[in-house]
Length: 149
Image 1 (spheres, rainbow, N blue to C red):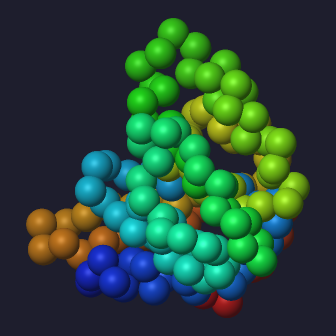
Image 2: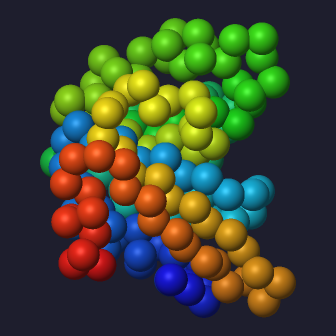
């Protein structure tokens, strides 16, 4: 799927949020500037969470309250540590996993153990700022849910 603008990326996040429910894990992958945080902003808007959603790169994880809470984490700075999975465990992301939607940027290879069923969203940005989105469902009913997008 192609998204022409950052606003289109946010709008896609709002649509995706309509498919999400408490307990869901969404992994966002792609290079710097591909639109991962913009997508998370759209997801947050679609979930009706409170406050602005910004990149959690330096705080690692934020909880945004709302009808369905959003846990937004960024594992980017954890990848160069001796044991990044232990650091993910220390974040205790699974403590709220059943009650919230958890979105993790740069989490591939680090957070899949949080849930047997998850959605991986790959974003790439072309030279004209168009975003290419690839959705990869893993387990559960993800493939069925994605049919409506």
